[in-house]
Length: 84
Length: 427
Image 1 (tube, each protein chain N blue to C red):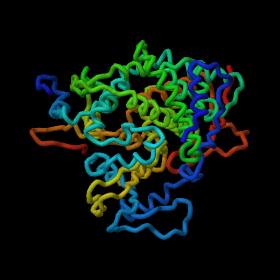
Image 2 (spheres, rainbow over the protein chains, first blue to last red; image 1 turned 90 degrees about the vertical axis):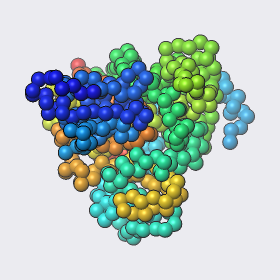
Image 3 (cartoon, rainbow over the protein chains, first blue to last red; image 1 turned 135 degrees about the vertical axis):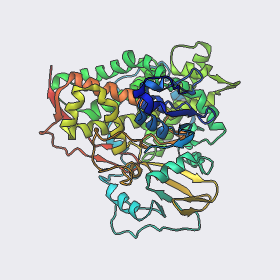
Image 4 (tube, chains in turn cyan, orange; image 1 turned 180 degrees about the horizontal axis):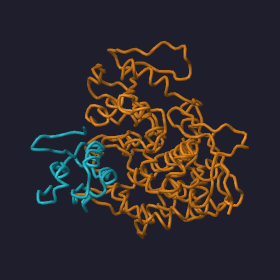
């Protein structure tokens, strides 16, 4: 999950919170392809969030949109957001 | 379907010494399903602008056909051309069932995950999917895939010209699959011949059924052997795979292995061809990729958007549905035109142009939803290794101006180049 103790220039990224629905995740690995620094697959094949500070919003939206089972959602200030 | 004598013949093929590699001519696969259609996209775009959903059979060969209907109250074939509508269908597997494939691919390959719905699909897919994760695939990349590609290029590198469709694109995924399965090299020619037979199903039913039966006998022996003595290969992985007490039966594994041939060979061969065609047609993009290989992912994804190797997939409505505002009755066969969805101008600017520099966007070239291509990471790796080898080894590669054929992408359900005649500076 996203932390709020990182440098200022990353605020735009970090204000997005990533949620993964483990029941919906099928382990396709598409999120890892579109946003390699942000997602990985755990040993159980289910997606996990790595260090989102390395990423960009654009990649996060690509991963969200590219999830074949809609297991990834992005939230800003408690509201779910989709690709602008 | 099979005679006893043929059964006996195929029973001896394991370990048999075989001669030359079966020759392959891609025109063997051209048929009524694939069709010699050069560019179906203008008509698809016209239809999509009228409505994302149409009813009745659509003929893409003739221009005088009546326009397909926009409504139907009884189950007739449905065609979906819009991107968002295709994605909606693929994400709603409770309404749009994959069991439609039972009577098509299922007859040739057996009960594969392609034709299963939840909950069985989820369990079966989870059992086979670990072997196809990108991290697992890394072990195949250098020793296996690169060496297969290099061997094939060795055969023509000194000549200065080649047809990449016939001399590289087909042989390479067949051999990659054979090696991932851990088959002895002596069996490759036979395996390639069966592969061609199996994927010719639409044009030659008897040949496909014969190949399917020969593969059953051959692979059953391999599965039994791996149960006794596991090795470092995919079949051994499948034999021991277990999730929450569930394991794959021999029948499950056999069906899956037969599915791998059309799913893992034909698609990769066609997709690699389409990428190479796009690059050769746009030398400035080829040059950019040559100079910066980190651009490969966006180049391949763009080729999959622009010309997906499989352009249509099927579902069947289990209940009445509404799609893009259009009511669809239960029990309708629904054709999802992935190629049309990938060129939906409501989503992609200038959709008919191959442009690897366009802003990255999701596409449905690998399908979507719970059945999204299991082998997508393998396909991405295979295509990357092949294109990198071409760029590393064949300097100044370009379409051969002296070739007398007229290379073009064609087909309907499956699309790929007729040929890729190239010349280059031999080393």
